[in-house]
Amino acid sequence: MSQNERFMRTEILLGEDGMECLKNARVMVVGLGAVGGYALEALARAGIGTLMLVDFDVFDRSNINRQILALESTIGIKKTEAARCRVAEINPDCKVVVKDVFVNADTLPALLAEKPDFVVDAIDALNPKCCLIEALYHAQIPFISSMGAALKTDPAKIKYGKLGATKNCGLAKFIRKRLKKRGLDLNKIFCVSSEEQVDGGFIENEEGETAGGRVRNTLGSLPTITAIFGLIIANEAIKQIAHFSK
Image 1 (cartoon, rainbow, N blue to C red):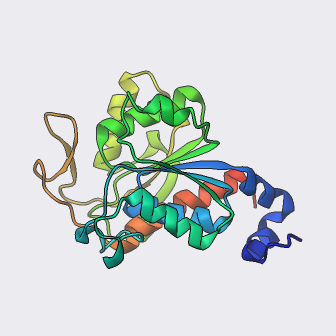
Image 2: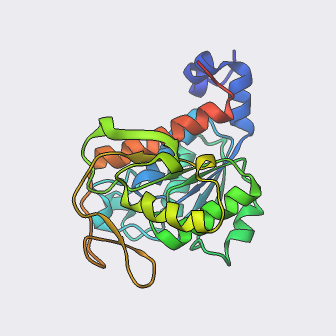
């Protein structure tokens, strides 16, 4: 048994070899908002040895309803900085690499040069998300993507599976369309999505960015659903990294 009491219960379940895999893993979390923040929380508490934090935004008060890193004390602070401090409080031994960048075709080569073993895609904008997925797919870097959590209210409808099998998700629909045109096998791309049928949701504006209902419309969301998305992604990532099966 490990001498690190912090991760004792995780090691009891995953074993010493599984815990060692987590300790040696380099995981990149792209997007530190509603979904990415909760994924990061679980990964840090699982004992991931190196966490790479990618986001270009700062917190504002409207983030507080659903983002675990958003507090009165973090308003106006970079999301990467708040995340770095959070990880340090959970596991001081974790190496944290901060990247304050917007993900696009120009910045992706430098990001992937960090050689992550696993990537959490928690981006909510269509163009950057498709660029990231395509780059990871061709680089053969394992990853899980989050689809749309806004407007969803039924946790029982949230599923982990293949992108090609997603249902009732506007964001997933547009991503499938774009990636299929680029020749990607949608059954080799894994994601978390909700099969709940809702009115409105994701549409694509003329610039190809995300919007809901009408262009620039803000979508309602619950802290519970976005958190579950992030935690499911982290759960799958932890099991895969630790080579755990039950």
